[in-house]
Image 1 (cartoon, rainbow, N blue to C red):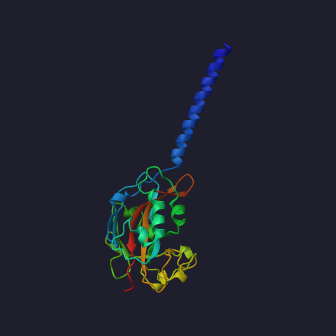
Image 2: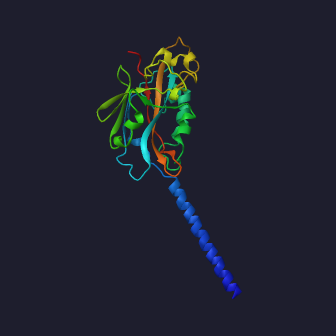
Image 3: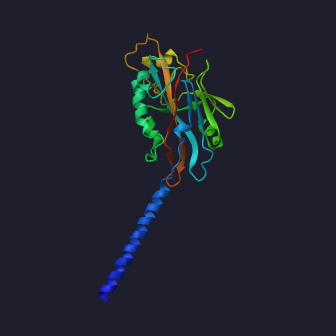
Length: 256
């Protein structure tokens, strides 16, 4: 009798342990919701001045709140009419290095729930802004099912268009942590933007210089932009992100 009772007790304990393990696994899944990314192959890129990004139709059942665009500007002495990953090193070696760091996350099914804020800002990337508009509101759930078009082809300031409305792009100021110049913060190739004295953490913190160029040389500037979906994890109220997609590497137009 003692042996049979001991065996039943062991089986009961094993059953309770298994229930506990499955419960913990289930809770873990709930704690780490996933937001699907924008497939890289869906993005249309043309030359060095245009990209169209079709947004998903539906994020229902996910904690999605809005899309964010990370960007960084790169100084160059190279004019590149069509920007692809094979030209990044010639444009600016830092661009090639940054892209190499991010490329493993694009369309990845294993690098999920990575903190994109830390990943991109750790390499000097900033959040894209809009002139006179809150970009988070523009790229919220109301934008789902539409395409966002980025246009750097005009002789005027580059723009983002959504459902027929055109918005002027603006550089970040880090919430006041740095003071970019020129003060209008437009994505225009100007001396104040690329001048080496201004490429500091206090002024143009969103710009990466290229060694071997003097301020008297001809300068070009390019901007790499990545997009990711963002949501709120209801269990701890922290941001969660989809994996990123490369919008394009655009050439900034010269001052008109």
